[in-house]
Length: 277
Image 1 (cartoon, rainbow, N blue to C red):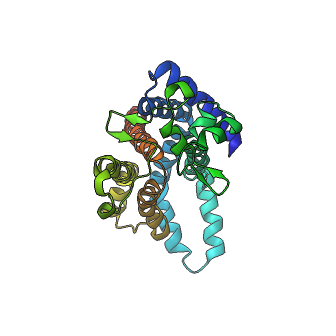
Image 2 (spheres, rainbow, N blue to C red):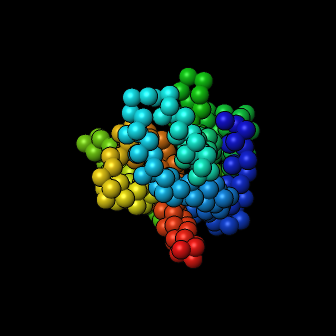
Image 3 (cartoon, helix red, strand yellow):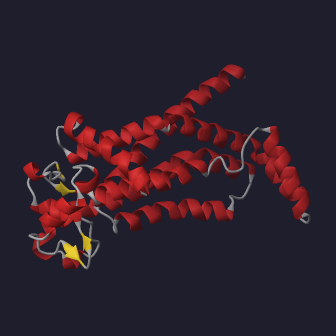
């Protein structure tokens, strides 16, 4: 993922040094806002597709009842229905497919801040690592450990946010193992929790209208799609406990911004629909 991590690192370096006052948490927030602005056209397309899918849902359910015993004919008629409403069957998956490489690229930047943000060479990092206990495992250098032992003069990134969260440390759900470091791990524990909660709110905001319409018409929610929607917040919780807190922090901010965008875009579409009626 170096092809994605490199430009992300350049952007993060610029934000960190010029816009965020060398505050890592603020740099992630600004980075997330920029990413969301760039993805606005895609989000609008997704919201438009979601609204159209809600409108065509009664017809889709009727097709399922009519061709319950003919799967080939059902698939054919469903394609015609999607074409009628000008909706792509994969439109809802596209934002998710784009988010994963973004997350992996950002994970690389967060995992290797000295390489991608500070711009230090592998040789320089290896020399610093020689004097940092626990920084090398096998032939792999843990840049987050090295970063914590350096000063800003050496190129270290200050990963403390609000003097409470160390965004370079991986949150630990095993509270009994915190010991004397509980003041470090207790604040970090809430980042995965907030990531999960914000993902749940985002899911609710994007599907609440559809659920209400399905309930009013007596339609059943799609089993597989519904299961996947429920699994996504759980996945964010699991992943946020397995990676440096900076990524979970990004995920939380991203979910909150997506929630705001969704509500705002839905209101715009609702007003446009009212004008047409």
